[in-house]
Length: 308
Image (tube, rainbow, N blue to C red; front, side, top):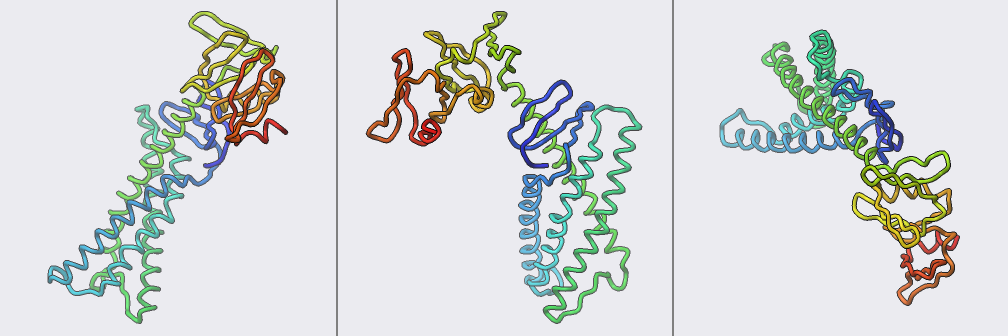
C-alpha cells in the first residue's frame, strides 16, 4: 500500500507523492491499487496495544501482591499481556487486507451492508482463532523456558476461556478495521488535495494555462524567467509581470524540467536559458544574473544542479 504512484478518485487522476491509491469510489469506499502494507495504522495499533498491556500487567501484578487476586509471578502477567499484543500486531495487516477487499459501504442498501457484515464477521472469527492459537503457543514456549506448566483451560474447561478471548477479539477486530478504513479515507482525501493543487496540464502547444477568475492566460515556458513558491500558490515571473497560479513548486518543477528549468533554491526554479551569468557569494550561495539584468539569489545546496 506504500510507494509512489497515481491516484484515481473517480473523475480524474493525480499524484499522491506517497501512497499509490485507487479509490474506486462507490460512495464512501476506498480501494488500494495493489496490496502493500501500511505501516502508519499498524504502528498506531502497536503503540495502543503496548500501552494497554503495560496498564493491564502492572494492575494485575499490584492486585496479586495486595491480595486482590491469586498470587502469580510478575513474569507470567507480562507474558500473558505481551503474547496477546504480539499476535494483535502481527495479524493487523490481515485486517487491513480484508478492509481493502471489502470496505464498509456508506450507502444504505441492505444487501451491501449484509454482505460486508457477513464477510467481516467471518474474518473476525478466523482472526480470533489464529490470535488465540498464536497467543497460547507463545505462552507455552515462555512457560516451558521457565520450567513452569501452562494450561489455557479454566479448571479443565476450554470453552469458557475461548469464548472470553473470542469476545475480546471481536472488539479488537472491529476497532482495528475502523482504523484501517479511516486511514484509507485519509489517503483518498490527501490524494484529492494533491490533485486539486496540481498545476494545470500543459496544452498541446506546451503553453501553461493560468486562470484568474474568468480570464485565462497562456504562457510559453520559454518566456518564464523564474518560478517561486508562495504558500499554496506559485509566482510565475514573465517579463515585468507576475502571475499567481495554484499548485506546488515540486509539481511545476516536474512539468518544466524538460524545458530547461532547474531548482536554485528550495522555493525557486529558474529558466537556464534566461541566465546570462552567475557567481558565488562570500557565504557560498549564488548570485544569478538574468538576461534582462535582474538579479536572483540561489542556494549553495543547488549549485551543482545549476552547473551540471
